[in-house]
Length: 240
Ligand code: GLP
Image (tube, rainbow, N blue to C red; front, side, top):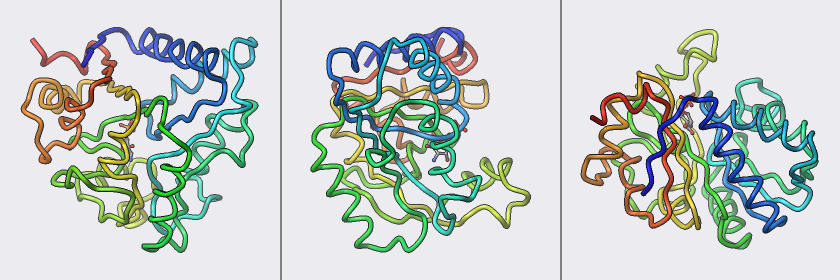
């Protein structure tokens, strides 16, 4: 595990350069992507690098971590909508190569199909992750088993509370989501976890310095052999 502490701006640039390098070496990479406010700066940098001609996504395949149950791809808070608006529409990726679990009609079979397409795509080159204030990764809430795969989950109250800022009221926040599991995430060749802001300093301490435990899903990432954690100074402030 490497912990890299910088400003948000520098973190975004350093991570963007990882992608530029990867895609130069392997244009047909498989990328695991994340939503939330954390990766927005990175996605802007990737768009900039694409526009400058430094990188192409023409042959890239992507898999997103999760989606809210009940939201269509046109819903402004759906993760499919987020990805289209904040990344895919601005780069040369073929939308057919982008995978976001569907929030409509998600059932056991849809989960199995998503997991199977992940496996069939081959090893993910980089899995990008953010971190929930309760330590969740994707929508794998505390106490998610280590061997979990793509499935439908009930969102923790803390998660609905944290994400209600994007909806008009808490009642609008979906109660369930479809998410890749911990074991789906851990199969990636490399994992990049990005965490920004003082509100996550305490959970960052548990993720980086605590014993790996399913009580803090992010801490399980310590068991991966190729993990880079990018923190801003605020998120790193409790590391001592
Ligand atoms: C959401 C997503 C996670 C994300 C997390 C943090 O619930 N499911 O993938 O990492 O919350 O979001 P943010 O980056 O907005 O703090």
